[in-house]
Image (cartoon, rainbow, N blue to C red; front, side, top):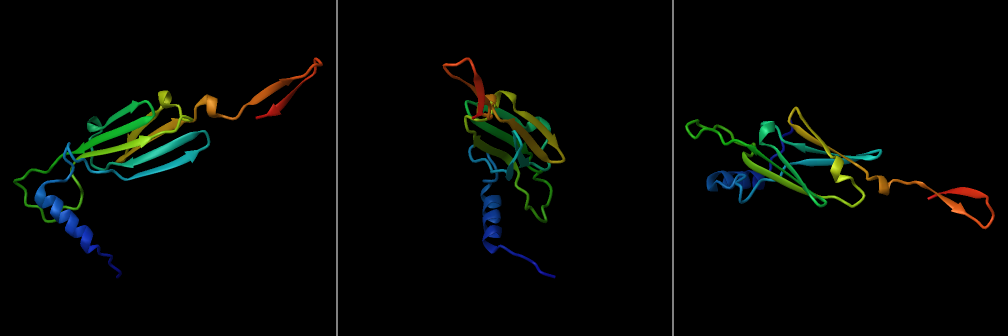
Length: 143
């Protein structure tokens, strides 16, 4: 059996646990994310397993989307045998281009994944422009 180890990752995780720096409001942990384009929609998925949907906060200001969530810290009375999953506050900001419609973002949370669907703005979609000439004939050219 092949096992991968990351001794520096283990050291970082241990240091965070000992110093209590795992996802505090002053220093939130970053959540993993995937982003794809599906036709006229950008789809962004954030991994948030074990997070209560009520703790997720989603804000849009201008072209910046901010996602914050919290996975509660375990009871200190319990003896931890392994603690690899970060707990506390998670935060991520996305700067969106002007070609996206931030007024119509749809969000859903299912099986530990927060999914944002961000449509392309109408003004950013290709469209046809009519060209007039001195004659009354008009023709349409693709933009």
